[in-house]
Image 1 (cartoon, rainbow, N blue to C red):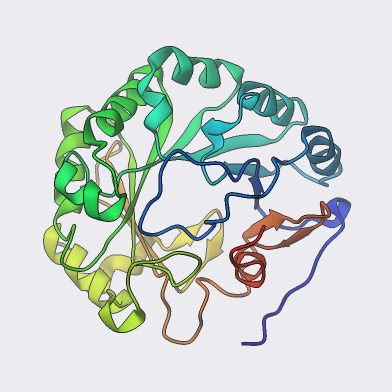
Image 2 (cartoon, rainbow, N blue to C red):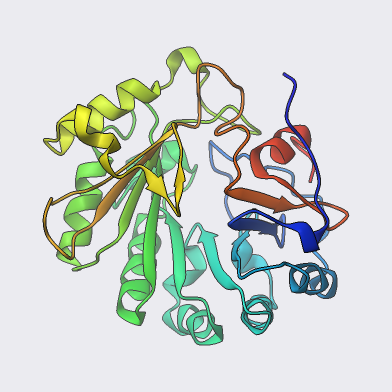
Length: 295
């Protein structure tokens, strides 16, 4: 496929959100991982900071890995991002966040938004399939810790057809029990890196919308009512509140990671960029695919 790939000098960055792969180390081996290479050196912190200092406006900096909590200087990474005037957020499997003191240290450093991967909610039988590990207790402890500390929480769940079909309902029950106004983010399996399902065995975006709307008793035709994300309208996203009309309510986001007309999610996105190997800024998914099984 011909990608609309380009690289920007940091001073010309136009992306709302920029991904930084601070480490390729991980403490899990999930069935689905779009960045599965573990042999890349950690990102140089001084070069990273020099890069993002040049951004022309305040930017959301998405700290990812593999697993970012494997970085021993993670609190310093967060502090430096804040010092540059940007907004750090982190995507994590949550295993190390089961230690409340550690989770608190990241919050105190300036991390206020966390995305936790919870593919099986509190069910180890599901995690053994989706994440190759019995980790439900640690995942739930991490979620509870982050809620008590005061993080804004996003819950990321990859739905594998026939495996965790009803996990969305269980997650909704859990956030209600914990009184968390989280965003529950559901997506199908993307065919990038290491993945468990080919497209013909995967949820299509339309099937996923119908399935989740049925679970939550929503009219599928109303799902695009709130599809503007950070000011960007994206055709591969649905975004809606679980309880309409309430000021505080968990929200649901459905995203298509396996589009019919592309082998990457959300091609030509102007919302998400990624810092490259030479500290330029490139479109996120295009850069991931071009460097598949590499950086």
